[in-house]
Structure formats: structure tokens, C-alpha cells
Image (cartoon, rainbow over all chains, first blue to last red; front, top):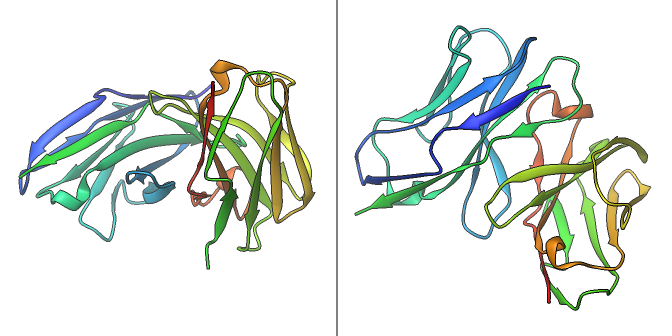
Length: 113
Length: 115
């Protein structure tokens, strides 16, 4: 069965600093990988996804993630964060043929001015 | 217009009561889900329906009973509420089974507090 580990439960950074949120997965078959963002008191929204092709995927608000098969990772990065990026970030995985999306434990990103 | 809407948004009730949460999606999706998010923000799938048929039923107490009257609605009924049921319950929908494209659309959540 697939599983997802987000290595940091909380990541505090200063505004305009770079950030990396780490995600590792476990699966014996091909996977589809996702990052979701949850702003305070809201539901989850898809940030970006890897299905196939280029291993580097980007979102419209400056985040990017790179699928690394050998390290079974899908870390999320942003070169310069803003206060508005404060949220909970969830990594998720679905293996080929599986019906459900499995989420990691979440990483709370806190931006300090 | 809200794509996935849940009611109520907040629910406070006593142990032993029975309560329901309703969910509706206007996206024309075939698949709907219920997820439970605990106090540590951990998200766990509970149920999934595809075109009114149950396709995922995780290890959930049988006090929880989902009902899908049509593919646009998925309700969650909980009998004999316990303290451990306190959580935020999220409804979601996707175009296909398992959200192959990755796009699960979530509602804003229903925060259940059992006293």
C-alpha cells in the first residue's frame, strides 16, 4: 500500500525567504503525486500535480515541485514566500490502479514579516 | 456559486446523539468522497461513491452511514456520537474514480464537536 511522509510538521520562514517543504512516498508501483494547500478555515485546493512527463511541475503562484523517483520524493519549493502563503500544505499520492488518494500529515507554513 | 457545498459548517452536539452532514456538488462529477480531518490536521478517507455506488469503505465504525441519493449528493449520517468523532469532515468530488487527474474539489468542511 502507498504511504506519504511529510518530514516537517511546521516550517517557519521570513517573508521573501526561500522555502522547501519535504515529501517522501512509499510505493512499489508507479505513482501520481500532488500538493494541496489549505488556507485557514477553508477546504483543500490543488496546488500542483505530477502525472507523467517532465519531473518538474509548477503552480501559477510561484511554487514548484520535482518528482525524484530514485529518492521517492516530491518536495515543494518556492524561491520567495509571501505572507499570503501562510497555510497548511498536504502532499498526496495515488498509485496506478488505486482508487484513493492518500495524504501526508501536512506541513504548516508560517511566514513571519 | 459554490462548487462543493456542505451543511452545516459547524455542529456542536452531545454524546449519544445522531447527526447528519449534507454535501452537494454542482460540477457534474461522478465521484464523491468523505474525508475526516482530526485535530492534528491528518486527513483520512472514509468513503467514496461513484455514480451512487459505494466504491471505497475504509475501516470506519458502522455508526457512520453514507447515503448518495443521486450523483450530486453525498450525505453522512452518524449514530450514537462519541467524543472521538469530533473532527472536521470534508466532502470532495472528482471527475473520475480516484481523481485520476488529481483534481479533487473540496468543500469548506463541517466542524463537528461532540461534548
